[in-house]
Length: 115
Length: 116
Figure 1 (cartoon, chains in turn yellow, orange):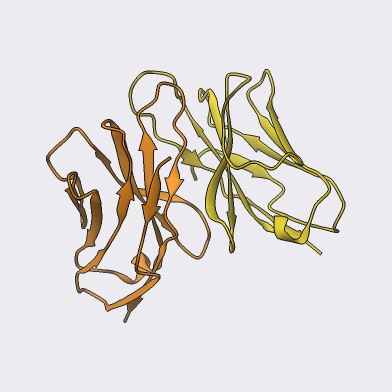
Figure 2 (tube, each protein chain N blue to C red; figure 1 turned 90 degrees about the horizontal axis):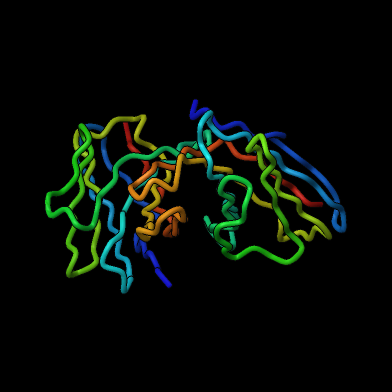
């Protein structure tokens, strides 16, 4: 158990819908990262938040957005869903910001299926 | 931008044998980290081993060791005395040394099967 929690574990929805994935980082971790793992794109970085602020953006679609709340949990919002958005979405957290290496701890992932 | 290439989509080896997984990367950075992650059928991402680019000594964690060739931009993983529990997808990953921004760039993975 990494200490990172993600809900829900599984999500099945229809094209055109909107969903929200939730992540709670390890206690004390300030950074949250979102990654997408799909058959087509492999494992790719989407976005990072550090202490409530967006820190880095990767290959995140405009239909996707994220935020990190004052209690440091994060939500990834996916809208106007398409079949190709079906994937495993990971959240990871790290202490971050210390000027040295900080390990990222991965949550168990949310499996999104778009029908 | 950094790229990570794993040229072996699948490998299999007999239990107790040694196997080496290959990874090459491309970057113009001088300070960075390299990783091997394991993803078993449970889908959990597990860090296996880490290498700092500024360190010449190859990292070792029990049965897992790396061969880091910085000039060649090569980073292979050796698993000794392989066990059934080593069956998993293995991802090579790159992280640029960057204060407060530690995104990982992954390769496409190698599916390793340990045969009893």
